[in-house]
Image (cartoon, rainbow over all chains, first blue to last red; front, side, top):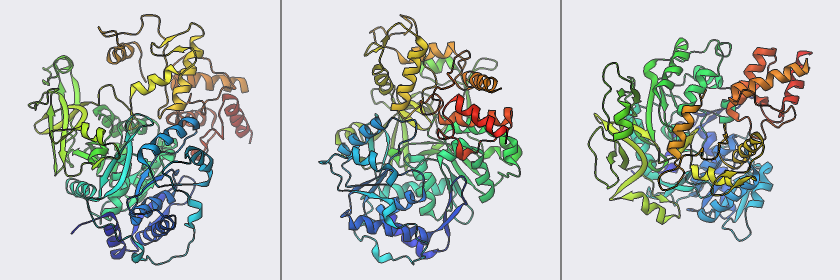
Amino acid sequence: MNRTFPSELIRLTREQPEQPSIYFLEAGLEDRVVTYQELFQKSTSVAAHLRKAGINSGDVVVLLIDYRFDLLTSFWGCVLQGAIPSILPFLTEKLNPDRYQADLRSLISVTRPAAIITFRDFEDIVEDAVQPDSSVQAILYLEDFGLDSDEDALPDFSLVSEHIQDPERIVLLQHSSGTTGLQKGVALSHGAVFNQLDALSSVLNLDPALDVVVSWLPLYHDMGLIAGFIMPILSGIPLVLMSPFDWVRAPYRLFEAVSKYKGTLTWLPNFAYNFCARKVRNRQLEGIDLSSWRAVINCSEPVRWESHQAFYERYNEFGLAQEALQTSYAMAENTFGVTQSKLGSQPRLQHIDPESYQHHNQIQLASEGKPFLTMMSSGVPLPNTRIRIQDQAGITLPENKIGEIALQSKSMLSEYYRRPEVTEKSFQDGWFMTGDYGYISDGELFVTGRKKDLIIVGGKNIYPGDLEELVYEVPGVHPGRAVVEEGNRQQLADRIRRYVTQNSPVSLRFVQIVDPKGILKTSSGKISRSANKEKYLSQVKLN
Amino acid sequence: MSTEITNELAAFIAEEILSQPGRRIDPEENLITSGLIDSLSLVDIALFVEEQYRVLIDDTKLNADTFDSLKELTSLINSRQHE
């Protein structure tokens, strides 16, 4: 049987209309329980509005919506209409609206969406960003959809577009990788996503009768979109969803939700383990019971054993089991998961010799009593997935040799949307080149580093070149050479910090202005990012 | 009293959040909208204010509308302490 998103959502709605699909949490409000029937019915209502606006099967619809329930029905409304939704981040208070609009404009020119769904407060920003000659035929506002009505209409399955039976068709676009403003839209087919869900279901032993997914992850990123949204909904597993904005201001809410709903599965980026370990007080954890949590899966940033330890030591007394802490290696281009550690036991650790790791790309276990680095496994490839490690010449390397991770699977992207040249470049001899580095030991993948120089912050991929370009735009900085005028260093550092923060997805913590010749260069005169990073880290103590 | 609170907050932010002890923060300087304090650090400020001054800033109110400068944060603490 050819499964598609609409066919599965219809099946689940028919089989279990009254079953809660989503518990939608918003700080300061009562939790909202949404059944499959309500989810489906409200989504068909969005689909009807899209249809009325002339949006057809295969059209891309960009969703620019803050955290609210209607974001979810907008996504499924697009899917039911056969349109291709793409959820993008919305403007936060730290970002410069001009930059946001410029990025949006450039994304529209590449992706050529037929419509944008947004909300009234965002009207000026969006209307301004859409040029008259663009592909966008309609800007639709949630407020006009009448989604607030409490009327409990029965789902009408006949409203669903009939074109959507081909599992090879693209179901969604996921924009999270690529240079700011020219992000690549990862296009996934129905079939690729279901292959991924099948693989996850088997390695995680998913059980709709027992499992509950709890997530605060944003839906514009693969981890939140797949693991924290599509997977539970299309697997019949209840999803407890909270806003990343609520979580970051009150991380204890995650534990409250797990305890209240007996959550079993959660995915977190590595920084969240440290954040949760340090920023929750015992008075916020009264009566919390985390013993239902069977897997807390560390994914999307390099995984650190020290972070797992800090998390475990903090939450052990609240019932967290050590073997609940798991790892995965994932990327949007493979729908989501590539590897998964084996549930029920701790991910494998290796103490390796730093010298042979750093200078010879070779893994050797450290000798007794000698300095070591602790490496934590990301597990084994999912079913339907193969990985190998290659050197620069494309030769497959043996175990315990570091090289680039190459990937083949049945849940790969169809293409980078409307970017054929980029798509072609990403594959070599039928293997997808991840640009990430790692090694395999006893069949398990250990990831050693992300794409060359790539910086990952909060799961966001940041290209250092993008940040350097921004620094060059700051008054007082000479472009290209990053030589700065003499003057008040503190003021200049503040200007740089503010400018980069407001014009990029990250917030700069530190800006250091160094003396002439303070920046290390390679023999060819280029700034050496890795050497400067090492030098900087040796000089400061990060907290 | 107010000056003392402002100074304590400034020292906490410089040392614990920015890791730049000795950095001067102007009482009127924008903290949140300028990006000086990112969203990951808001909870640190809330915990510090609660533990130091027994003033609870609800997490739904942790944004630039509630305070965006040391001056505003100080007056928020003062008004709550005198409630």
